[in-house]
Length: 260
Image 1: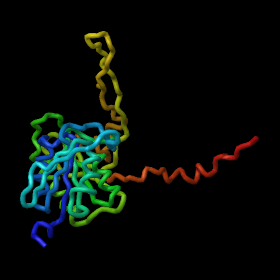
Image 2: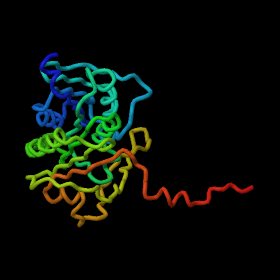
Image 3: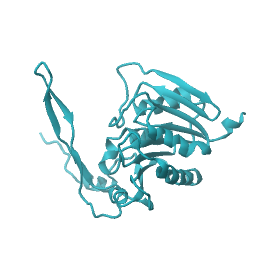
Image 4: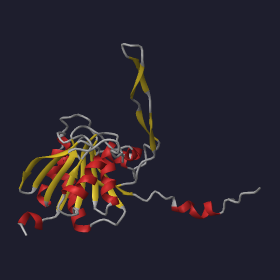
């Protein structure tokens, strides 16, 4: 067996596309830990959540192949990338999956919309210890120096300790000097969505989605939103089982009898 195959296999993906600065930072973060396979969308796929491509074929091509680094471009969603990697590209099931580093935070309810976390959750569904990383900065030339340093520490802990089945991690970095790392819960909040109404040259209506995030608990220091707004990296354990277990017994007491 070659030396590279003796190393852990790390699958790297994102939703900002293969050319994004954030995924290059992510490769730099984990490159010393194993044999790196990058399978990422050929263009930006932000907001795609867990979406998959079912109506058209998915095309993929290898763009780089060298010792410990293998890069593929995929004309599909982040979850498509993970599915193809697991089923067709990787020589075996990866030891770890990392997604990001996203340009823009994925705190609070954004976890449900995020392609970064969609890919992370797909890894988790398939039994791969997975982490999604995001930086609270949308700029294409954002500075990922601090994110790499603190992200490497978080990933090293994953390598050493593993994760419980059905659990992945959602990590967010502030866009400034990082004071430390906090284990948090997801903040309660929502997007107040607005639409910019315009008309095309033929008089047809079209809309651009805008809006802003509203944090319902801005002073809750145990949340991910508070952490990144106050200079800390947040680590939120995220589960794929969405069952409200506390409500099961109450729901069983409802009247389900159908009366003629």
